[in-house]
Image (tube, rainbow, N blue to C red; front, top):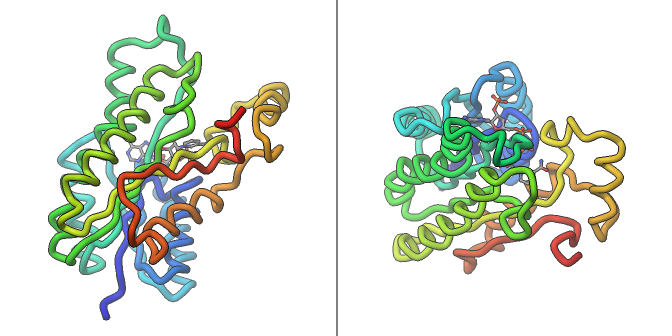
Length: 246
Ligand code: NAP
């Protein structure tokens, strides 16, 4: 049987890099897509190679449909097929409505929401050729609870949940299963600007008493694209230490 292939966007760092590593350990060859940090992406590719799996770095801006189409073409040319797409690339900026220009709004919606649509549009025909596939969209707990300083991010990530449900219904007959994960606070560059006070406040809202690790989100994604996810589609798996209950 041919080795299955996963394409992970935003795989140069954080949750995406952890997911690329985890899927490689689970037996996938992996396309490591990134925006600009080629050295980081190549390091991920190198460590996947050391696991005995094939990997390829692919640069591209997911906010552009032509680049998304090219990312998929390059992944299939390099690795032979496409079975799994993880739409993980995302940007967050702490911004109040007054400080958010229409241009900034458009840009953040384009990366956080439109990119998942463009990537899915390019990937689905390849998954049909492979006889089925899995798509996982990386949303956030903020899509469910909101936040007072990131309306564009919340709107885009809530949109991803709607996209997940719609695509799950549209492609169920093609054996393409589409789910989302909704992480809580996870230790990546996104939290780097936290002050100690921010950190303490954040942790007070998390029943498990700590922020999550990228590997813990990667484990949820690996579950959804592995045999455990065979009968799961259109769902959101929350990975947040219990924080949506508080
Ligand atoms: P991160 O460490 O900031 O990494 C972001 C990744 O996205 C990088 O690989 C970056 O590539 C890539 N990227 C950014 N803009 C892009 C674009 N226009 N086109 C293609 N790739 C682009 O992020 P993270 O914390 O791991 O978050 C990953 C996902 O989880 C995001 O969707 C985020 O919204 C979501 N999430 C994160 C948290 C959290 O607390 N960390 C919580 C909930 C949800 P380069 O390295 O090349 O710049």
